[in-house]
Image (tube, rainbow, N blue to C red; front, side, top):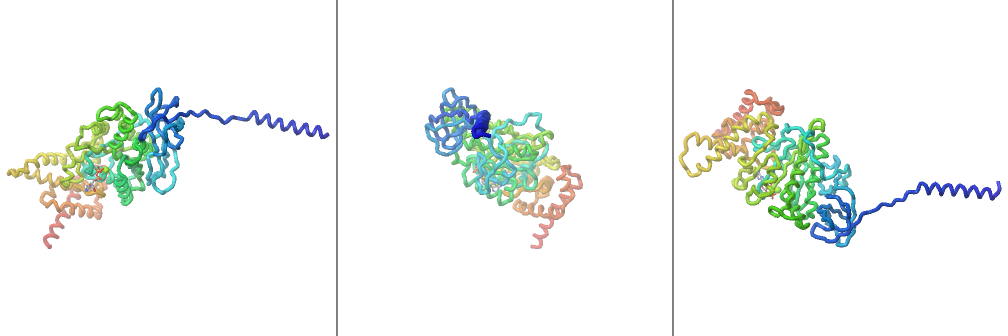
Length: 511
Ligand code: ATP
Ligand code: MG
């Protein structure tokens, strides 16, 4: 082969290679849609020059921060800022063409995260499935009736206003009436029940949230709990999205067939953050200056709580939103909205709180519209007489204060009522098992405590619980298996209580 031929061959091969390269070349160009920040406010911005953005779309700022397209007008977009990161007027803004999502895995249990799913503890990054924070609520045919109780371990709730798995029960009351204590106890009581808990702190002081977290840790409740928090100091945008993000985490577990309990503490702060954003974006204010869609805000959130049917895996999501009332005004805008959205409410009264009747639940103003059907059978026959006796007592108590001479039946009603009130009192971090509650309620209904000094009842309760643990009665099994109490079960339980009372009298006699 001549040198010329050789060269020709090399040239041919090179050209072939080049031609192939040309054919397989793909330009890696995309068209970015960008706009600019035209106005900046506290937690909000207006962005102009972005076409085709959809409502709730996530937008990225040049500073690295994110925002939610919220208020779409013909000229520009009102954006809720999700980051305190420095954004300035004139900055570039990019479309992301996706909605806001949060990363969820099973490893999120025990973690403390913010509303964007970023860890706030030192336990490393969280990587998992990305779930949009807003999801459509399950359809009616995917739902099943509420049939299982969610035991709070709090006597007055489990007996008189029972909560079922998949129910939405509102807790409302003025500030410092023990709202958070109720839910912390409920979370603690889910130990070893397989229920997963999400505590979503919304717009609270840091110290208050720190207290809840340390309480949960101290009682070994963090293993099955996720804390998602947006503090009062966070941008209002983060406070606004917090409950939706928390619900997506809850749904992740619900779709795995688990029972989940979610607490929103509290939605008053959520409504306020939303009002702030809406006013800054110049949306027209309505009643109490809240924007017109505030009802929809909370109803679409709470619609996501449900009990799924077997075909959907049978998981459930129980929601307990908390609302802070002002000067006991239940008929303010946000409380009435929430009362009508939920399946019942627990009202905490400051009067009861100051009298030391704790938990300060006002039975007359509290109701559970679906939990009764899920309540353990053993409670049902006790709850009726208990509620009646207590209501009669509350009515009479006002009269009795005037020192009028009372006939014997009235006297008896008063005594019984005081016993019931005393037995329903409960200290924090002290949830009771179902069988312990039933034993105490049975005894008070039978009048076993009528002749005892009230101060003695707390001690007596402790002793009765200790004896129950020792004796392991068959009746306890029946209660756990959701059977009605038989005559012999009742005798056994009452016998145990009588034994404890007698032992105490004897002890006093000797002393
Ligand atoms: P805030 O409005 O500040 O959120 P809150 O309504 O959540 O308050 P908590 O923080 O739960 O109220 O409770 C207020 C105080 O009452 C706490 O100091 C708590 O220890 C006390 N407390 C709550 N429940 C009980 C109870 N059952 N027995 C004794 N003390 C209680
Ligand atoms: Mg609180």
